[in-house]
Length: 511
Image (cartoon, rainbow, N blue to C red; front, side):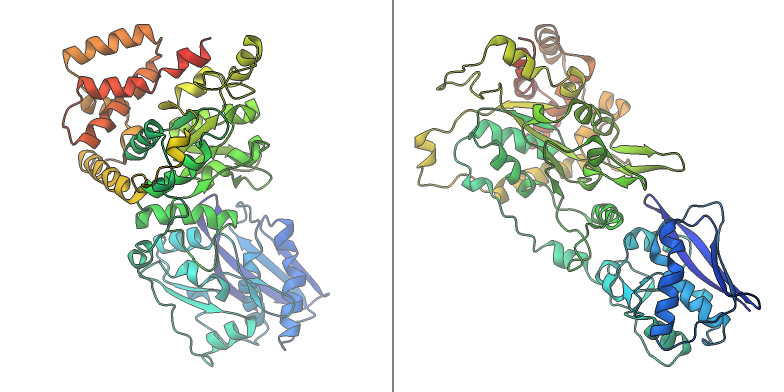
């Protein structure tokens, strides 16, 4: 008897329908799975066999053929165990469920018949919903992850027996309740706050501008000057994730298997700080299954690279295209997947091997050759893509012992939110969310400067040896500073401040 159930597969973050056909015929006992199935799926035979037997059902000793259609799409996940088992039970007349094919069924089985959590559920649900499907059966362990998608009916089961009884009508299950994202998103607390960062007024101002416009930042200064602390405080002044942004981030983490089961959705902007020994594949993504890397996990959030020159050059150079395009394409022999990677890069580094080059109160003991070799680990094209360069000097004893706290992150965040709202209103109807993402056409429209400002930029262009990319990034930063001031047009003082964040090229990288 032929039995059909439906499931969904994933190619990157995009789901595609899979029809599971089970045919049981007389013949020598065998269990074949066809349809470009990976080893993980072919091993489903043993999991399904054990789950059926240990759940009290009969595993037929006939010839069983399982086809996963379409046959030209590679399937490489064990999430089809549950629909395969249910189709097999229906083929052997142990399950009378004519509505089986009306559900999208997902779940990995254990040998005792329990249903385990799966990866990538959220993008599957969204893709299936877009394809017109409304009813789903998923693992109980994935309940919270599915509780934010509206206008679908999601039923959760903890075992194969529960799924069978539900489909037979002997067990009543209610669709999971839909949660309100705004309720949980308004209760976010951060572990780090700018009010505890003493001194470093210029660095904090630079990070405020970066947050307001989505710009990349590098902080250069001696060890112990607070660069890491500043970076960890940075997410606390970023605008909260919108529901749409949260879904984008959660989809990536769901596929990667890094989603917290207790939360079900990511409500705060990611902060990723990979160690400097991180490989190119771990940073960009890849491997046999083309999994997302650190830059994808930092999507809509922050990628913090501490001690930037310590990273392998090939790893750093691989960041150039994602920094420009906000996405990364991972190509393998059998697959090519594009992941989103729109992140803010916050980098820090010492100015030399000993860390004291350019310090006001400490002597540098490095030779010019050693300093040159250290700084040249960072290429010009990479530095060109970092909008804001800020020097962070050692904190004074007076600053450390100040009795009054500095300005809080909440106060800075309010200014950032106002500037971001100005940008959202200005770019309404486009896919642009902030000044750092401006296209060439929008740049020419919204970064127009008057004649005195043009003269200033001309002098700076020649004096600082700016590239064309650096020129546009200076004006984008100036546009953000103007937004923080609530100014409609960019003025000279905005450009002067923006240029002050491009002076380290000549001090360090052109020595």
